Image: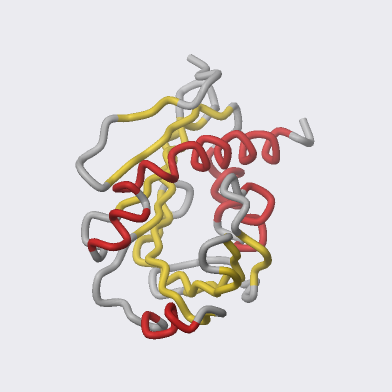
Amino acid sequence: MRITAPERLPCMENRVSVSRQIPVPASVLFGILAHPANHLLIDGSGMLRRALSGETITQPGDAFVMAMHNDEMGEYEMTNYVTEFEPDRLITWEPVMSAASREEDRPGIGHRGEPHMWCYELAPDTDGSTVVTEIYDCSRAPEWLRQATQGGERWVPAMAETLAKLEALATADS
């Protein structure tokens, strides 16, 4: 079965996910997702500017840094600490601000005490395609972040766009 539009899955409070069936093997998709520079090519939020560390993610404990921008915060950097990693199945990371252009954001630099997380889960299908689910979980994040992201709902359209771009990138050579 092919999902032509992103499928929104029900989630718990302050946790959202979007899934899409992509006609590509999980190993190909995982290869794209495990390389931080590729995140620029699939970013549906428009906030990523460049990968400041280009090493391929290979295990929990790895970290990668992304230069970012949004209209509210201006320029900033996020160091993303990989917390779960299962080849061809799962990548999860907790982003932590590591640089900020606004003075009011600087006290949060390096603070990992109340994490939020991003995750990609890949589920191979019998027809050679893969169901990719992008998850944003801010259930343990500070109240201000849960409010700013509307419990994660703010990211749902960007997540759907990211999965569409992931499919386009993964199928470009076929």
